[in-house]
Image (cartoon, rainbow, N blue to C red; front, side, top):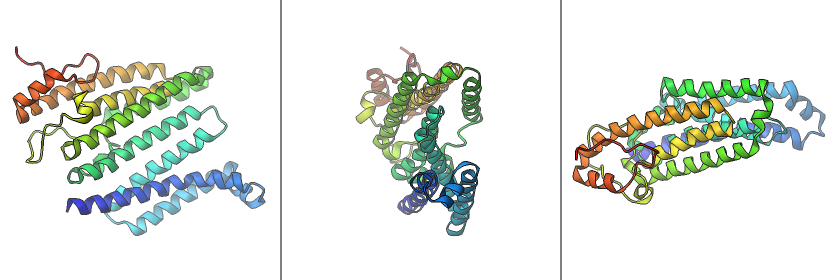
Length: 292
């Protein structure tokens, strides 16, 4: 049953993501065939924006026809993320001062889509719409919106601040490394990984201490922590760099303490010994304090 879910919902998300991603074809066709009058007229400027809206409408109708019920909900989310990724690619490749925001769009869209896809691969029994993490929390949504507002306001008032390419490249490297570490942690943990802290131990739940878990007790959190800060360094958002660092640190400190209560309950002395040997991976976060 879990295998069927992986194939069906995973395949649906992949097809839908690439349907959304195909929006990159609009400016590509406009560039390659710009010598053809009707192509230039209909795919550039204001008409190009209309063409994009028509594309979204057609793709949404297509998904509605081939997918029903829960699968359509998966499809429309994956398509939206593919579209956002495609728009990020377009902005990144365009001759514009918004290049770094294009990198950010690609990073954000890929993060949320890959969370769903990797969960479908490693632990299909836990797969749900929440696996996209699009509705992670109210605070997460506010943080994302705040970063967009800061970027736009500062770009309008202090445009030179947003053109620190070396800083944006540093942020991009943090995003790539953080994303890679998190996904490595998910694949290493396999079916033991879950987006929700578990209070009851399943029969298949084992203590993972190999791979990236040999270096950090919570590598998925380490990756997410530096990924989130990296997105704001990439955007050259000084206020959100500080805000994301403090908010993420506090969130993961509380999350790790909550999770380690369960892990000690599940694995007893094995986890306590593992905890003594391996750091959490996050600065100044030691996890649940043990009585001496």
